[in-house]
Image (cartoon, rainbow, N blue to C red; front, top):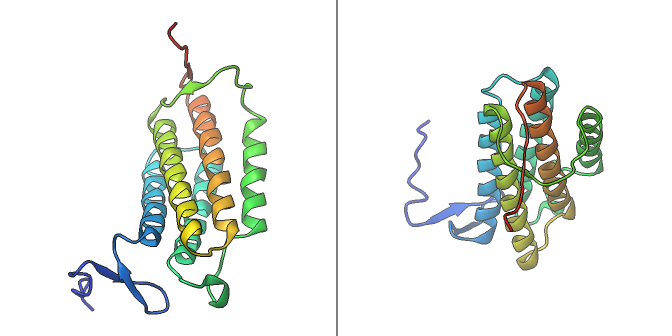
Amino acid sequence: MKIYTKQGDAGETSLFGGSRTKKSNVRINAYGTVDELNSTIGMVLSYSLSDQGAKILSQVQNDLFVVGATLATPDPEKSRIDQVGDTEIKGLETWIDMLEEDLPPLKSFILPGGGGAGSTLHFARTVCRRAERETVQLSEAEEIPADAIIYLNRLSDLLFVLARYENRLHGEKETPWIPER
């Protein structure tokens, strides 16, 4: 089987279920950004991470495939695809709470950065926020499962906490944001 089909040469693509839409459609932007986020997390996994961080991110990558499939399906509630839900969202919250136990409380905003893994996790967080915004925009045009938005919202929080955790574990200092006056 060839990787190229030439089916998208005119600027359209197929959705799950077989319907076609323009590649500029808000739905394509939303699940395309989820795919970009998944690839960014793959970049994070190329760094030295704690066993816990690697385990978390491996599960997140699998969940993001589910979110992407949900967003690529015009009527996911009627289809037989898996969807993220309470279990996955509570899992993110559990990881956030667990990681925060090992972190000093924030006393100010911090600048994104640190070591390779930490700074790439901060970047992944910003991609996640964009995916969330684009998914909200899609939800304004078409009905989608609310849990997809909730999952992305909680995931951005997890990525922030995990960036702090990995930076601390690897001896990278946080830089507080000090506004100039």
